[in-house]
Structures are given as structure tokens and as C-alpha cells.
Image (cartoon, rainbow, N blue to C red; front, side, top):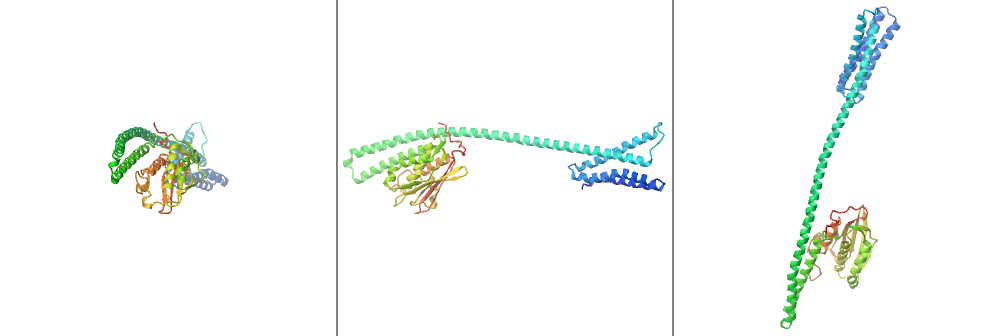
Length: 404
């Protein structure tokens, strides 16, 4: 209970005390006890009301600082009634005057009226303050929202500018890659052509070492040509990709199995496939993704016939696709490195390719908003897993619709 409510309690105690004194004086002066009791009740009731209100105020949401204001209004009601009684007493046309008890009752009633006005005013002031506080809170919220909108607008402008710069950069890089590819191809074709002429024209004059040297040189030039082509395709995964659309992976894998049928038959490979989902993506790139993974599984199967299993598992709005084999496996220290450009785990003589296949796979998966990883142990096979967005639930990545 606030100490400020003592003003209200004080008025209550005062009226009760006045009622008791009035009743005792009236009985002592020979008054009728019943009239003294009635006077006590009429005067003490406002006092009891003040005591109740003093306790009740602490349970309301009224500011304790307003309690003295309520007490002042109560005293104001007493003052108004006192002025009324004074004017009546001095009025020349009024012969009779009120007794002390009647005056006390009138003053008590005036205090009750003032109490009601004071409480009403305190409630009005409290509501006004609450409205003002809400308005201030709304103004602060509005200012924060306006500031946030400006920040978001600036961020959007920055992102749009960044996207525009990225598109321009991709166009320049694509143009640069095309020029470099063309400029590198020409001398390689010249080297290969002249090596062929040397082999044709001076075949009779070359010993075994000379023929072997020419063969190495031609092979190196051809591998360089392959690397240039692969790099050009790698650089164009995002800039030259097709727009995203729903893709049935079952159909994609059927096409891939047809493409690798020759190597699968030669190695007596067994490829089992679970039911695959419909995803959102670039069908051509997803076909290349599966072809790279299945071809690797066949190539690195070891001495036994390749056994490959393709599966899919649902996780919220994405699918986890996996290609598991029982091949030679990968050392844990090399499992991150194999997704980098030109990172080969085997000598060129042991395996074909430019060493860009898995980097190509990672770039495709990342363009689709997913990630790719491998779980493997040497001699126990490998499981390449990657995530792809569902055809219905997936958001479209920013680069899903490249600018051609």
C-alpha cells in the first residue's frame, strides 16, 4: 500500500472521530440516543468509505502520485458545502439554522461528492497518460520501422547493385574464358598438327625413344585441350545454365544409365536404383552430376565388378541423394580435397580425366542451393551424398535463371 494513500485514510479517520464526538456530545447534552446513533451512522459512513477507498486505490492502476489530488478534491467538496452552510446561515431570509450534527452530515456528504470527482479525474488523467504513452510507443515504433525500412531499402539497393555487378563480372569472365580458350586452343592445335607431321614425315628416321617422346607430347597436348574445355564448361555452370524447373530424377538417371552403358557392360557393373523424387533444378546439369558420380564409381571399383546403389531420403524441404559403391575408397584426409579443381588422387597413367569432375559436381550442387560430401574409408567403398531442393517447397536460388 502506497504511503500517499494516508491522505485518504486520514480523512476517513477524521470523519469517524467527528461522528463519535458528535454522538457523545449529543447524548451528554440530553439528546435522544437514537438521534445520536443516526448522526453517528450518517457521519461515520463517509469515513468508512474513505478508509475503504484508501485500501482500494492500491489495487487499481491509478498512479499513487494522484492520491493527494483525490484528497484535495474531497476537501474541496467539504469547502463547497461549508460555503453553502455559511451563506445559508448569514442569509437574512432564513430564520432557522442547521444543528452541529446536520452541518457535520452535510460536510461529510460534500466530501463524498469531492471524493467521487477526484477518483473520476484521477482515472481520466491515468487514461490520458496511458494513451500518451501508447502514442509515444507507437511513434518510437514508427520511427524504428521507418529507420528499418530505410536500412532495408538501402540493403535492397546494395544487393541489386551487387547482383548487377556480379552479372557484369560473370559476363566479363565468360568473355575472358572464351577468349583464353580460343587463344590457347590455337597453339595447341598447331603443336598437335606439327607433331603429327613430324611423325608422318620422319617416321622412318625416328627410333623408339623419338616415337615415345612424340606420343607423350601429343598426349599432353590433348590433355591440355581437355582441361581447357572442362574449365570453360566449369566457368559457365552458372552463366550458361538453364532456368530451374521440376525435374524427374528417375527419368534423368535412366538417360545417364544409357549414356554409360558401354563402360557398365565392359566392367560387368551392377547399378541398383531406388525410387527417386521430383526436384527443382537444371535437368542438363543434374544429368551431368549423376553421370560424373556413376562414372567415378565404375572407374574406381577396384578389381571386383562395380556394385553401385542410388538412393534418396527426404529431410524437410530437401532431398538427400546418395551414390554408394564398393570400390577402393578414399582416405579421410583427401575427402575434402577431391572436390577442388585438378585435385587427383591417382596418377594420370592410372586413371583418365582432367581431375575436374568432382569440382564440377560441387559447383552444380551449389548452384542448386545444396551441398555435397563423401563418406568413405580405404578399401570399403564410398558414398557420395548431396542435397537438392524439392520441386514444390524449394525457394528458387538467385542464380537459378541465368542471364544469357
